[in-house]
Length: 283
Image (tube, rainbow, N blue to C red; front, side, top):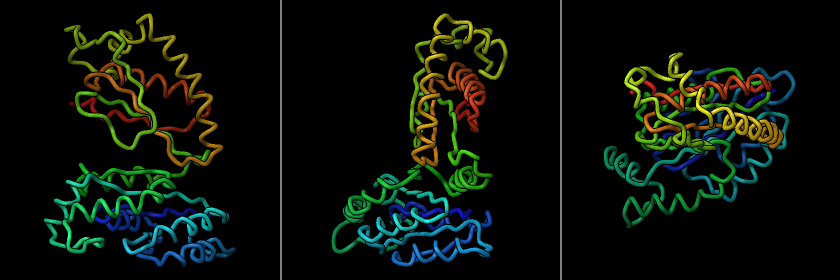
């Protein structure tokens, strides 16, 4: 079955950079494809005998959102697997990028760059609503963006068709972007205040034993497991391409790491294919 990724989003948010990474990963990339041709490309790539297995279609800044939505609908009605990646960034980040390149914004007239950005943001809101994944590139340099794209599209597709990630993080380092669900673990006693445990992380057995030994931890994990046992198959059934569950504690080194690893083990026993990441464990 042919895989399709449609890359859309704000001008300056990184569409071309993402396309370059996908091309390096072996995807067949078509940049600035006229919107009416999207269904035709999907039809040709999915024909019997076609050697093209993975296709990335970049929707350019000149595309009319009113044309993009029907084209996406036609592509999704075919036999291939379709995912839509929408790239966005804060207005301030986009203004800095345009000032550094001295390029004119596609929506620019005689007004400011920030006004042109906001005009495009409003125009593309319906397209964003159709996205399987919204990626905020505001704080990503080119190397971090590449790593994120490789993580999302470089591996094998899970049998379920949905890529599930469990992410631990620390609130003091900021909420993670591009997540679907945030669970706060700060109600559990903090191992940081135990001098023996402070230099360790949730990957170390003494911290793990401390967190899992709390009276509230077991019931918390049981109820969270029950909830996700209900939700995950529903997301798969609805065709969701990505599910990211973020678990946070104060610093992202102790409680959230333990809970993320334990929750991942429980979900794997239910047959969920997933990846576990610890954003702040090394801080």
